[in-house]
Amino acid sequence: MTTAANQPASQSTVVVGIDGSDTALGAARWAAEFATRHALPLTLLHAIPKLHWDFASADAPAELDGSTHADGVLVAAETAVRSTYPDVAIHTTAVKGSVATTLVDASDDARLLVVGAAAADHRALGSHAVRIAHRALCPVVIWRQPVAKRTGKPLPVVVGVDESEQSTRALAEAFDIAGTLHAPLTVVHMWEIGAAVGMGDLGGEGPMDWQLLDVLQTQQRQRMDELVEPFASKYRNAHVSKVFQDISPAKGLTDLSREAQLVVVGSHGRGKLADSLFGSVSQNLIHHAECPVLVVR
Image 1 (cartoon, rainbow, N blue to C red):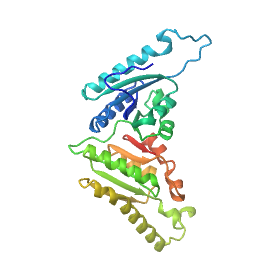
Image 2 (image 1 turned 60 degrees about the horizontal axis):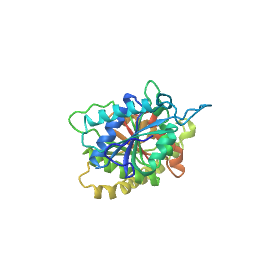
Image 3 (image 1 turned 120 degrees about the horizontal axis):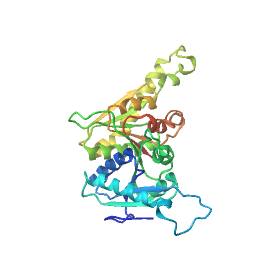
Image 4 (image 1 turned 45 degrees about the horizontal axis):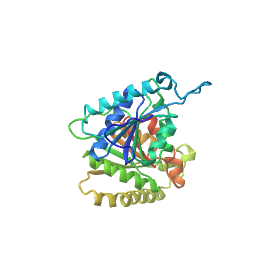
């Protein structure tokens, strides 16, 4: 079942999953701001899980196949969005199918997919957030209300980088969205250095190779500069700060999320160091970050 308002769904769009929760409404408002700033249409998508009836028929009552509930959920979401963003082009769609599969399918031609994080009532969308983020074919925002309060200045966008190709894509997204939001950008490289220089397996009591430590730190700072420089040249008005910390990426980025409006991260890293440290970071942030998380594939 599909209903439309103002805009065909075929063009590149910002897709937001709608499940009737307050978190989904928050995600829809965030998505509407992104869509408005990028001159894109907004698609509000509600998945209706398939029912297994022994006597299913094409003329089953609407109240049984979920369409009545879907209509109400989508109307409420569209009303909430239009109260703040009256000019955004909105397309509403209800599709029979599993939540994760329906949203992943919609990501195929989407600019961005936005879903709400799991709330206290554990509604359908939130419980599928990790699966959606790691199967989607476009960047995914897992939205939750930031704990940081605005003080008159925009809260920063934080992006975590490592040595993978995905860091370049994550940086590109982070610079773009920070520029759109007129927000400062914090580029972060976090690496538990002790494990690489002789202390990790000895409970902190092994001999520290200080020369190796200095070499590794210098190399990592140079690599960060090399990653950032092309984007800083392109976005000359960007206000960029760099953070280099000896801490696990998951913990460090979670800590920074308490003072941010968005954290950007790749879905997984590549290479020995990236696999060991960054492979689970996006999943950890989806569950524990205290602001929205943008996962870039």
